[in-house]
Image 1 (spheres, rainbow, N blue to C red):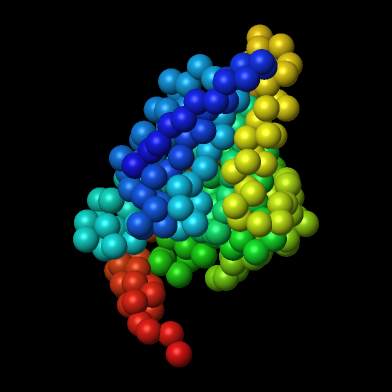
Image 2 (cartoon, rainbow, N blue to C red; image 1 turned 180 degrees about the horizontal axis):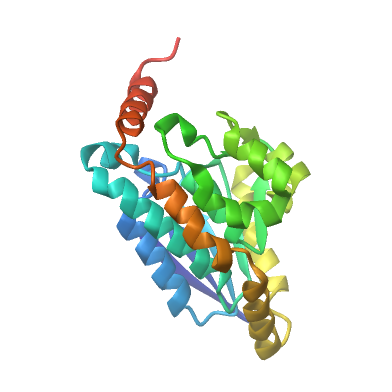
Length: 250
């Protein structure tokens, strides 16, 4: 569920870590998030690119798996929090290559990146209220990236924004013209970030992580999201969302 590829050049190595369930639009499972966090912790590359194989970066949590086993939803929230914190604590710069869509948990990963590359027609957002769960777990990294007011609005709205709007509000740092250009552009950005001193870069990353609100607010935010899992309303809303997704569109 995670693929890894290493690129070498004169400035050092770049590792591309990809979500690898393209047939499921890279919908997250607990093992996938655990493998993502482990890959980031284990990497010795000078810079990291987080990508998604196939036409979609990530469609969020695997809702069918959540419906089949309530424990999966809780495990996904815990795994997402760990993945976000691990990415923020990385010794290397982290660039995200976001093509197609980054929805809910997939969009939450963006707040952990140093640079996000996408395209104008991409769809991004946090429409998780429709399944009866709070996106609070995303707030500690989203708010510093786009500002508290915009983070609040984005987490409360039930729909998605496009890549152009995401760029306007600071959720995306670079826009390319076509989805196929996202990954090459992200790798190029990673190359530019490989040039500084390795030790100074790692020290800077460590210090910035200490300034993050994640360490202070992350556990409380995760608890807020987990607190709704398993309620009658949450299960009813999840099943309604699944039915709506499977109904044919006019």
